[in-house]
Length: 115
Length: 223
Image (cartoon, rainbow over all chains, first blue to last red; front, side, top):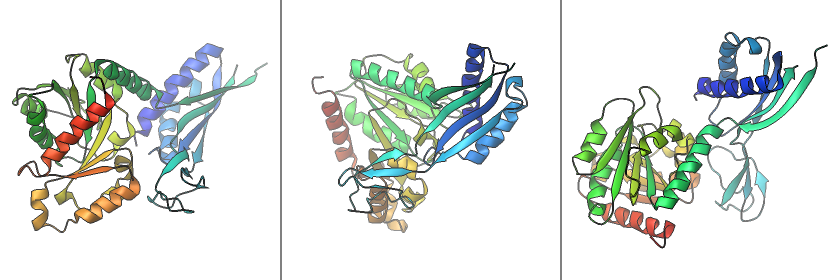
């Protein structure tokens, strides 16, 4: 969802970092996309390809998208698990009180620059 | 000789929205404005629910409404017809409200409201991912839409605190099962408060408005 505007935000952030370090170009970007972030890695790549054509500092940059699966922790018994479908009950004790450990993020992790 | 430097950033790409949403939340906590965010598919009855809700509140509370739509001021006009201040945000194309849009509109409103209702663009998908700084997020599901929707739109139900099943006056003519919809929604979000209403007949409106008052009291105990 909205991969293009997310990549726009990404490009703006990266552009600032490029300027800050006086870099020649971006070699690689590492982005973490959570299963529950509503972002599809493939669409992100497609959108990124579009920006590569219009931003010289991205011309040869590689976008690495790391998919982070959803992981929950049961607040009742502490068990950590990957949920199936949309049911978030604890698989150990069936408690409905769970918290998200990972899988909601949309994170720019690293930027590799040629300086 | 070119050097490769790795810069560890660790920055959320949704940061901009969350930052503004937090700022809004803080401002509303200061002004004791209880903010209710309504989201649903188009036509589920958000504006109609407000038309049934606001008269019960406006004699004792200062109420304002922020309407979000792609085009037209129709919804804001309906609210103004009740004698309530409404600001319309027309996004022109964006299918959901984001915190910066809300902040901009908020500047046009009185800063001493007791209740602010934000009616999002009709959409059961994207609004779920954008914090608007609200105290209470309400998802509406209308009877004609079908009782199998929560599992199809999990994020909308998971991020809400309240589910209002609307158009209950139509239950007889459809296969909608309140029990099925409620059960499925609670599996996605066990903390959901569920209300069944008909703005048309008035069914369930009173418990809903009392709930809103109670929630405001709990959020601002000394207000």
